[in-house]
Length: 209
Image (cartoon, rainbow, N blue to C red; front, side, top):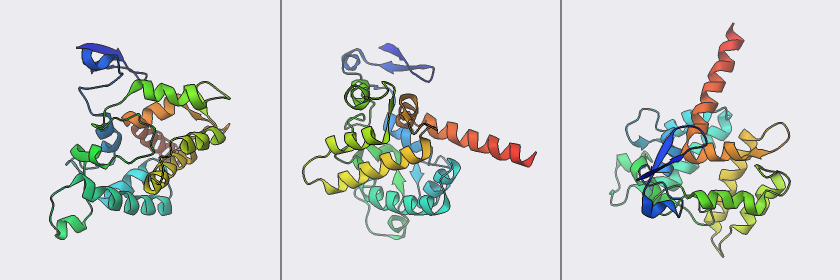
């Protein structure tokens, strides 16, 4: 086992076999990405928790409500295979441990089929599409990436990728309209959501003073 320094501090273990391919193997990055929305940490994300998570990072009520419904509707069955129709399945829970089963096509490939972070695919985003700034994407560059990632006739994947990235851009772009590399990296490991929640709470606290 070797260790690789993370951009946001700390170290992640990487197996020697996977190191050359940039795969983090001792932790599931995709699980970390969604775990923020598991508000009670029971391993299942229900629509109201997704709603609470979106609100916690500063999304409006309408966006939070629509996102909660569509995300859980789209992911629930995929992450709970074998579950028979029941009141429980109607609650649209998403199982964190099985989130890799819900990976859609036409994505960036930064998560592999097991939900692990693939560092070279992450770097490839900026090598290919960051033309204005090497460490950020403009709105135009982001749309160019989404178009390039489209797989033939994968309409669901097109919509899912567009929705994810455009939502991220609108919530996290800086004052210059740039989506920074470190911001995108934080989305992939889930740390950005925690940071956004802390900043929102701090801002709310200052307004009360």
